[in-house]
Image (cartoon, rainbow, N blue to C red; front, side, top):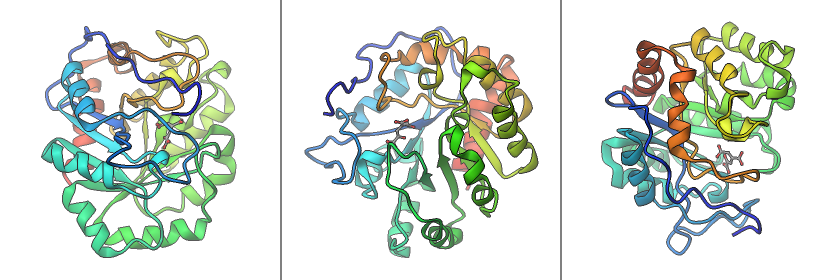
Length: 290
Ligand code: 0GY
């Protein structure tokens, strides 16, 4: 494990908020176990193991029905741990893989058959080496026949440079963690409003209103992040997703309690209708109806 890496919360609280039936945790990971699924030699951090059994136990504890499991950078382009978790979960999970431009249609077919429905393009420099845009475009061509979408992860300061490329992508594009706004600047800040405008101008763009624990300066219960998530849910009720981000890799300030994260949902989506869109209708449409 990377020195000072914080393992996930061992005993999250039982949430007071009850997610609606068929609710989906649409952003979470599995790590290892490293003796079965070694981490990538190119990884930038080494996490603690976070197994599929632990993920599914958390899902049940929090009251969710399904997971969308996202391949994390510590596993590189080897999706074996993800595939294994998807096989175990059956119809209760879908996956987001990371692939190279050398991926074969046989590999994509196998991943599709176990529930992969998207690839992730990661632009966060502390997590991955830079991938040339041409390589991403080759991957786009390969996933097109499968009807997959693209999940993108970047930091707010990189959006101006990335925007022409991202908005040229021909699929649905899901932006992780609200594009990582600087919450100190407030919802009306120009950078965040440009992110909002990108969603408004590009109906193929969705976003995850996730990771208050990463974006917060104030810390739990993350009151400084809630206005950003609520704004996006109210502006784009049909294009938002929510996820725990368990097991919370690379948290430095504190270990988040997943029960508390779940309890914040009613402040982000303030009516039962918005909660159903966020947790049930949107993720099921994007990951299960395809
Ligand atoms: C997240 C966030 C992080 C890590 C990864 O792929 C990853 O390693 O996504 C991060 O460190 O911000 O979504 O899990």
